[in-house]
Image (cartoon, rainbow, N blue to C red):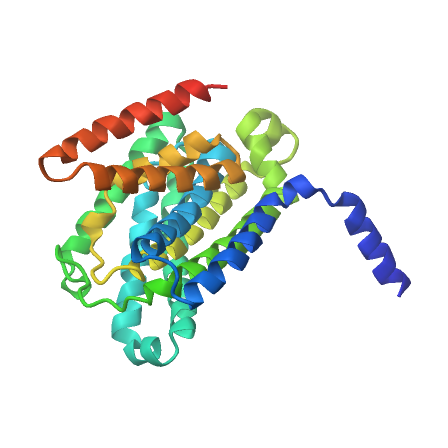
Length: 320
């Protein structure tokens, strides 16, 4: 009993509300949205927006690990997302299609594991040589990786070629956003725990001064590759969530511009801020949805101009 008392006493002393605000907000969102979803009081467009915001949060937070906390510029995040999405969709539709119908939650968990591990494996293969580079050179290599992944998937008939995987199993939009929020919650808990661990502190030390970190005994190569793989794993899971909200999953959905959109979320939220990335992901998703509704047809090009102007104004306002 004394051991438990000492443990909880130590935890209570170290506990800070500001470090757990995001968890309380997620719990509050569940408390409000769950009864609305189960009673069918949410509009279809609202459910779609919550799905998009949900997987965008995971994309932004996972990229923030590399860009914000490690301090390396990566433009290939869409490549890892597409790996998780396409390989996950292939596994779910070809390897165990009956399981998705009989036990969708189990099928989703299995698919997320497959998609996440596949993306992490490619993250290791790319990160091991690429992270020896810095700055613009690393950005170019990761961008090339994104383009290569897209081209390869489009040339493989098993993945549907340029058309993609059609008739993909689509989860019920009325409640699937709750599952996405649950995945976000546990993913953010894992990421925050990593950031506050000794390995996370080593990563931020590398970002601040790599030479000093190496001099203090930090294994720079190991930590860089580990963060890259860790980020890729969650990007793969985000890809599975994207695939689970679409009837067709194709490689041309995850282009260079997709990586830029996620990078915008990270930059707007503040470099090295998990909470900021979450808020920016919701804001950017909301802006895209609103602008898509306002400008369509011949006016679609204006959407990009308005979107760019809004981002410029936000950056100017939050330039500190």
